[in-house]
Length: 321
Image (cartoon, rainbow, N blue to C red; front, side, top):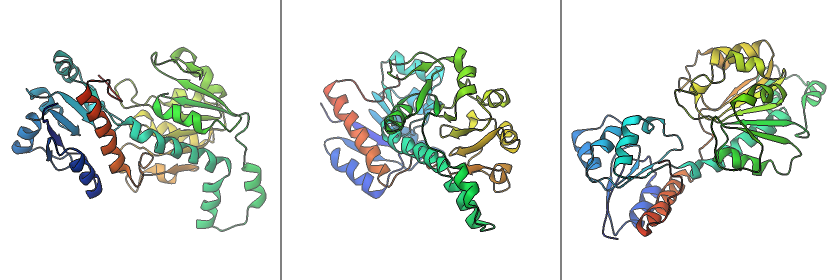
């Protein structure tokens, strides 16, 4: 293939930039700064590229006359899921890919860590260490559980959920998946919207991995929290906008839910005086589920794998459109 112009504004470490530059020496590579207010110069460079990698402005993608492929550096792509952009890419058969394969492993491990921390009451014990330092041995022992004969419902079943199922394989648990629409075939029982209330009423653990969209905004609301089995646990690692946080606070304060583990909130960063911080049995991490030490290099290698596929004319990984 002839030399291509590649433009990127992906957030990369120096090591990540070095790997990308070293592997694309036969092409013309332009580094831009991470997403901010685009300048006229950066917009022109993005619009003149054959390949765009990172978080480009959707307007530049629509305006580009040279664009041949777009690779998004995140798993989520809500800002690119618009009628105008979909139509513009489809009209010229321009593929849009994302980076889900990079983040499914750390996200699945994060959920697994939360499940085990809850089962073994690690956060509750740490609360005692930070506060009254009482030796509540019997209370904590009685609160500990085994991941045995419990039901885990994964809402938004996709690549992260599939990897989580693999991590759960050694444990004798029942796992259900939920999709809002039909997806790829799966050995796991996958339900649709008509069966969700029943599944919520029987699940011990409900894991929210829904993407952000108009149809998922506050998907977990007062009605759905009321459908959940009393004493169940809620985990959210997708997008903060999919949870009605006021309804969640009430469900925790009333003890309908035993605990909630949130890696995403709305807004982010969560203000220091937000009531979620002090809600009982609510444990918050600052959107780190997908993070890992070599994240930048793995992002680049995923892009490079797809670049090789693009050059050879074979199907791309993580294709959205």
